Image (cartoon, rainbow, N blue to C red; front, side, top):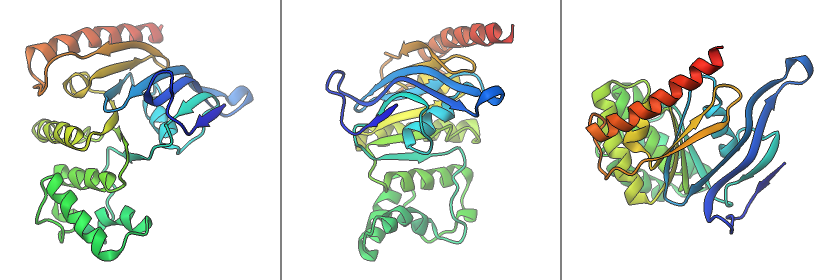
Amino acid sequence: MSILETTDVRTGALVRIENVSKQYGSGNNTLLALDRVSLDVQRGEFVCLLGASGCGKSTLLSLVAGLDKITSGTLDIGGRHVALMFQEAALFPWLSVAGNIELPLRLQGVGRAERRQRALELLETVRLGGFGDKRPHELSGGMRQRVALARALAQNADVLLMDEPFGALDAMTRDILHDELERIWREQELTVLFVTHNVREAVRLGDRVILLSSRPGRVIEDFKIGHPRPRRIDSPEVSGQAAEITDRLRAEVARHAH
């Protein structure tokens, strides 16, 4: 197995996952979470990972983030920095909003004045200007996720990994944050790998939707999403392709159930 440090010259992919498997345990306690997954993510792409619960979506994200090691295969992140954003904002309650955003900059050794200025700029980016001195408990769920996004952006990562970041939010807040994320993705020229269980969300946001099989996770379909941006989650185009993907997902879940 190997984790490479250079951009793949054959595909130009910023993230290249080739025949990656992840196994937990050994002997009778072996659990195969991912089985020979292959996936390329091009620079600037917004790719959504979709599948039934337990299919290995979050496991794959953890491998790309370097939080866990692959069992076999090749994982190439092009020597780039990645940032990971979870469903929960996971902000430190004793720090101000600006302090939470400054934390990764502080760990990078950035001076106090510079990191303060950068935090204020990022708050403007996520449209929370003026909230830097607030504490996390004073913010709504959607606002806390904006802060978490700003903290991820503070890491100057080329690849943003997002693990169901809007799953706990109400529909209206989620829809607004879809627009905000798409705007920031374009402005910052990010590459995004986004895990979700919401089919419409995947079609609303993604350039591609990668469908994983039930455990062990394998890539069973790569849907290209060609509808013009910006998209609405309730538009006929999004609804139509979401229905197609849902049918494929249901067939996979039914197959696994038997």
